[in-house]
Image (cartoon, rainbow over all chains, first blue to last red):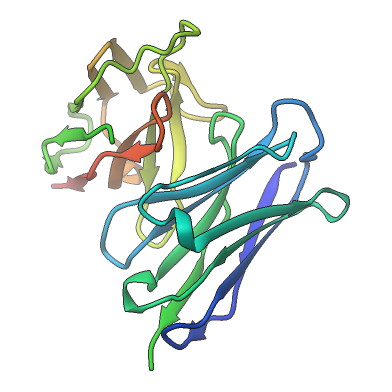
Amino acid sequence: QVTLKESGPGILQPSQTLSLTCTFSGFSLSTYGMGVGWIRQPSGKGLEWLANIWWDDDKYYNPSLKNRLTISKDTSNNQAFLKITNVDTADTATYYCARYYYFDYWGQGVMVTVSS
Amino acid sequence: DVVLTQTPSILSATIGQSVSISCRSSQSLLDSDGNTYLYWFLQRPGQSPQRLIYLVSNLGSGVPNRFSGSGSGTDFTLKISGVEAEDLGVYYCMQATHAPLTFGSGTKLEIK
């Protein structure tokens, strides 16, 4: 059974770095063709793709945020990570991770609020 | 970036009615590998998106067969043949052919 679960700080202040963790089970990020991606959704708004990482450590970023994003993985512990530097209120959103096998499984999401 | 235009933005349907949602792309979504990476998702209230359709017309595992996808190039359609109460929520199309991956703005399905 495939599951993904996001975790994060809940609330942070502007200019801080947001660190998110996606802990998954039922698949391995060392398997050929497998990947994990991050997508976010401000409350009441649409979906925005942020970044993804592949089994071979290839990484892709949304150019609109590229300089602020870093994606990584820990294959041994079945985790993927996303860091967003210099956050501001526009980064307030629910953050989802999803399996990049035709986007078949998504986590429940984690709410992040940026506020002073 | 590829822009996906979904219409309508709001759809009101009765139980049993058949409805369609359109997703039009600003560029062809046919990839050089021969695949068209167009997906449909349903986000029920308070839940994460759930994949319905992948590669234009392939039904996701466990998805009822009243859902179907069609289209090619730049024009795509999601059809629900006989809406049920559990189908309410927001439907999104998404393309993964061109970087960056982009989503449509969503179609909210309301049940009359």
